[in-house]
Image (cartoon, rainbow, N blue to C red; front, side, top):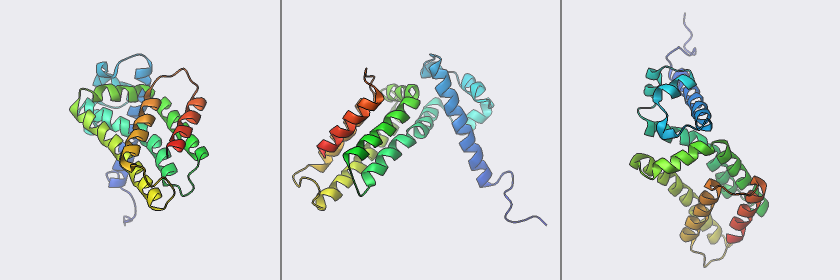
Length: 202
């Protein structure tokens, strides 16, 4: 008698595992190819599939086109970045040290996938679908900061005259531009200066 608790080959759980495995293999492959100097826009699907050790048909099963590929890869690559910031903003005990630690984690995460995320920003400037995706990610970050600043304001923990929406936009833009830029500054010093700037702003 077959156990009803056994996961079959085509069960949703197994399919979910398969998707996650394929996506991470593709992300690693794309990072590797970009590091070799190949521009994302010039990467053929077949080469990505070969580098990922998957069939071309498997690639298209998960990624209908390269815009969808870039969006999903950016999702995976930015998860850690946004999680680090979200954890700091959500914390009860906000501190300058915590802000610096969060920026250190975000910078490290960006550096790990720098070429992919630089490709995302470039493609977002002319591909509507990718552009909408990236704006939605940034807007979500702005909204997270705005809500937290509003909570702090209502609790009397920050200046009651602060325009929380404008401040959220400014802080988000500052983080995005600094992290995405290329600077002749060590990651440690950059994280310290950026974290302190955010702390002094709020």
